[in-house]
Image 1 (cartoon, each protein chain N blue to C red):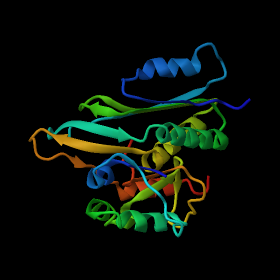
Image 2: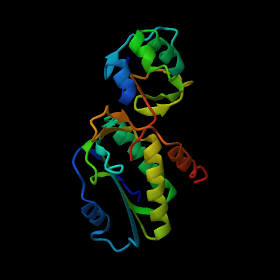
Image 3: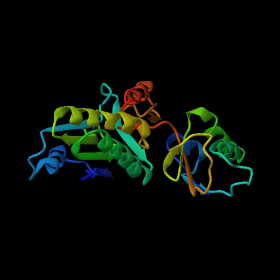
Image 4: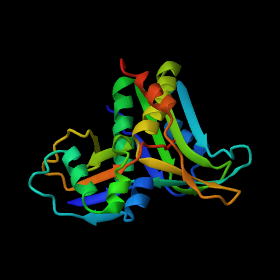
Length: 155
Length: 83
């Protein structure tokens, strides 16, 4: 039976431990669980907060499409993707990806794939608010992220 | 057609969303961008770096040569920086 991914786009924080236990509780076929949490860093004390804008509707749809691709490519027993929007302070959570599988390789690779494609395809944009009070500015997309996504072209 | 803008594209255009009449000679995404650029200075400024702008039709990523067809919504935005 095909695995249904859990995809959420929300302003509220998430609890990674609680989300992970949802993928393992009551079952004995999960041998590997890989959890990735992306956090807001303070950029050496200069950043006051990140503001995440998103395209409501498309953000959920695109994360769902990427999650479905991962489920087609790897034998997963569960997959959770949660992305926050709104103002996020340094040290706080931004994104959560959890992949569960019978074996570790599938879980590692699926989580890695999810993050690479989420970065280049999910419609979210970060704006930096600085402690100096200078004009806030949009974060530029990184060429590295595009390159990372091409790693999976043979998958 | 409903047009939506995000991030710096939205800031340059000055609105989040607008409804426009699409002229009959607009077939592709690139044609639509040319039309939007002709509307006023803000639109022209927003689309100045045209190759930097990403496009979605009905919430799916598309390319400049994609035909608009019966799409109800087009969205324009910079390269994504989530995660």
